[in-house]
Every structure is written in C-alpha cells, then in structure tokens.
Length: 301
Image (tube, rainbow, N blue to C red):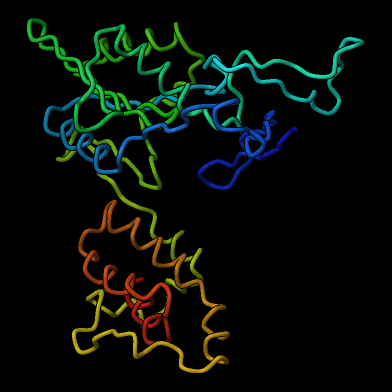
C-alpha cells in the first residue's frame, strides 16, 4: 500500500510531500519470510560521548541521512508482494518479487544495518566492542580522527578537519544516496549550537517548551515557574495515594500520566540529569497513579 506524509520543518513549515510504498510485515511468517529481525541502534549516551570528544578535541561534526534508506538493502529471502494501487502490471502477473527491502518488512532494519556496517568496515572503520553502532578510525601518522555514530539511517560524523570530513562524506555518497544535512543543528529532540568563540563549541539544549505544551502544561504559570526543586522533600509518594473507588480510577484514567513520565524519563537521560531521582519516584506508580502522584509529575515539569 501507499503511505502519504507531510514533512514539516523546525518552525512548522511544510518541507515536502512524501509518499512511501510499504508492505504488510505482520503477514510475514518466521522461518519462511524472515529469520532474524534485530537491528541495533546507538544509545543516547553514545551521542553525548561523541559530542564530548568532539568538544574536547575540537572536531567538526556533521549529520548525514541515507535517502530512502531501506531501498539500499538487498532482500535475501524470496518475498512477493501484491502490486500497489494504480501500478500497471504485465498481463498474466499478479505479484512482484522484492529485490530490495522496503518499509514494513520485519528484516529491513537489520539488512540496512548489515550493509552499512559492512561498508564502514571496508573503508577501515573499527567498531567498539561495547557499542555496536559507534565506529572510529584513527590514523596516528597523519593525526587524523574519525568518529561515526549510526542510528538506523542517520549518521553523526565527527572528524578532525574539514578536508577529512569531506572525504568521509564522499565515500558515503559514492555508495549510498545521501542527504547531506550539513552542520548538525537538531538530534533526538535536542539542539546543537556551534560557536567557535566560546567553550564549549557545542551545547545540547532540549526544547522543553514543546514537551510542556504536548503535556498540556502552561509554561507561563507562575505557580510552576517559582518552584526551584523537582520534588517536595516533605511528601513521600506511596501506593496508598492511589485511587480507592471505581469513580476515582475512571477519572485518573483520563490523565496522560504514563506519557508525561515517559517524556520526563527521556529528558532525564538526555540533558536533565538533575531530575533523575524525582522522575524515578513518580515512575514507580505507572499502574496506580493518583492525584498526589500527578501533582508530583506537574511539579517536575
């Protein structure tokens, strides 16, 4: 089937109208249509390590995106799909055999990872034992350093000079259809700023205002802006604060508690370690939250 999507820019403007051919992966059978579907991605902390090293060694950082990523990966299994709507087919045919992975295939992410991983090894990049998506190459004689962090089809590249960065991009562009996103500005909901005049040259700043708006909190509320600690030391959260009547449980079910806690967990892992303890406390009550627990979540925001 066809899937249509409007891609928006950082300020809400329409950047592109996209259409993508997808297949029904839920109809695939294990052992027949696929064997392995696991694909690793870089940890969030790995990105921060790359940024930290780049800041310390004054490396240049760019971000590249593999265009129509899954279409670069070959399909090993024999898989046939129904022709999509509006697509002409020759007489006597009722299906197509896939030669390349398309979106929706269970094994598509794994096949893409295997292909990119093999290519990076072919140009002398090494893989960290502790991180299956963090690559490095160091030529000591020429004082050259490369670092590549891979997240599905996004590559964050750090290099010791502009010429070296251009060489890496050229190698990748020769093998894949690449969208060069130039200097990195946003990654995983965080903003990267570059300023050669001050230390550090890169700062990561999560756009918390969008997260507050998504969770229906008024960022201009003085009652919340005056709070200077993420949790109230005089309140100990417990399961006894959970709803006791069916009516209370129905009322609390309307509150997006789990979504809000998930957002806070992302913040605490990304750029706000100062709220880790408070978030860990409210996360204990995802299955039995009450008004006091919700109040504690709002306090963190």
